[in-house]
Image (cartoon, rainbow, N blue to C red; front, side, top):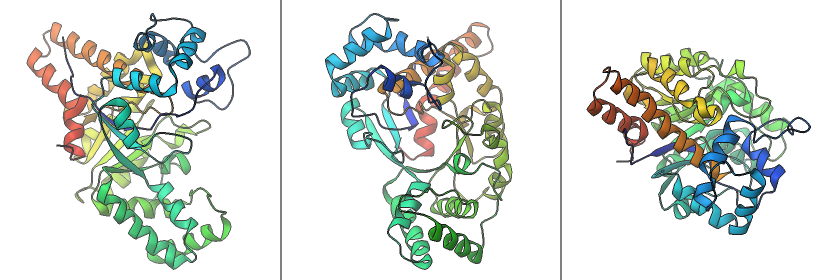
Length: 368
């Protein structure tokens, strides 16, 4: 049996503090642009089936119980107690939490308390820039405050993350924009935005990425499936190839998050470039019973010291459970089969499992 007693979730979000009804729970379960088709339910997905199998026992119910019964038990326990039981049942020992999503979500401190695990903050670059813009009166003060804010955030954050692929697409010019180009873009953006307005200007997105690269902290880049309505043809990680090449040798590691359905492309980049890493976890939540197949495809190309686990979970503690449990099951199945076939030794399989589950993340993010 391949075991992974320590599990570092290298990318996730907090959980909702509010009670959820069936409709609102389903909306969090599968991020879509609208409700399910009439007469159907989003529980009838790979993710929904995985939740119904893995989560009810943690709340004292039988696996695969009906959604209505599960949610009634959840309400009976209360949102805080349900989250505590679920997070502590996930087996995750360290959470790296992106605090850049809107909504009533728990922060790293609350996550650590509820889960009885460690938790560290990941800073989202675009939100940081938007917060700076809200309090900066001029272009000059915005750019100066932005550089200072990124530098200040790097003191306590474990990593930066960017949703440039979500906001614009990953086919950004690879080189740093010049000072005049940055000032012009900042002036146009600030003149046309209201307080809270999103940053999607490609010049400023590139500027942010390069400020983050200069900090030396690991930089996570969102790729593949993401928010509802996203044009995923713009988030294929191969579109980052020129940027990846431009950042080689600068001392900053790049982590390609999510990746699916382009997970093989992310694995390829991790195999080619020494400073690139591939995320192996979040795709498994979407693929459920097919998770072992997807994980095996990532393991085809990426060096084993370049693959990291994450749940990618947000909102529902159930998704942290599903991410962790599916990953552990898939890893044990894939590596166990290779051991049974004689392709790997058991000792090597156990060593590599430990790297992917926790060791690689501890090294990359300096968690030792």
